[in-house]
Image 1 (tube, one colour):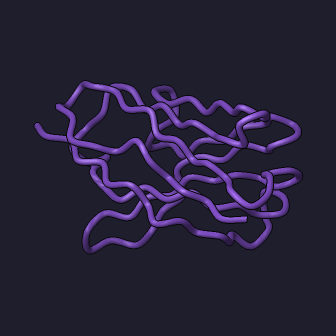
Image 2: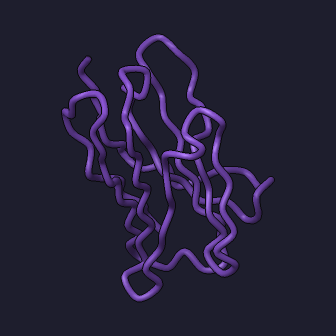
Length: 118
C-alpha cells in the first residue's frame, strides 16, 4: 500500500487547510493512519492519528482543539483539517500507517508542504 499526502499550500495565519492522505494499491484496513510533520531544522513530530476501523482519534497538544480527522472508507482516504493555522504549523506534513496505535509507522509518502504566513 502506498500513501500520498496532498492539500498543502500557502495560507495566512488564522486560515484553514484540509490535508488528504490517499491509499493506493490496497486499503487502510486494519491500520491506524497517522499524520506527522517536520519543520525545517526540527525532528519529525506526531500530529494526529485515527484507527481506520474504530474511528478512534488522537491529537497532539499542538493541534488539539483546532483540528479534526475524518475518513472515507470507500475512497481509502483520510482527511486532516487544521483551523486557526499558526506560523509554527509551517512544515512538511506526512501520513503513514501502523498496526495499532503503538505499531511501527510505515509507508511514508512524499509529504505536502504547509506554509503559514504571519
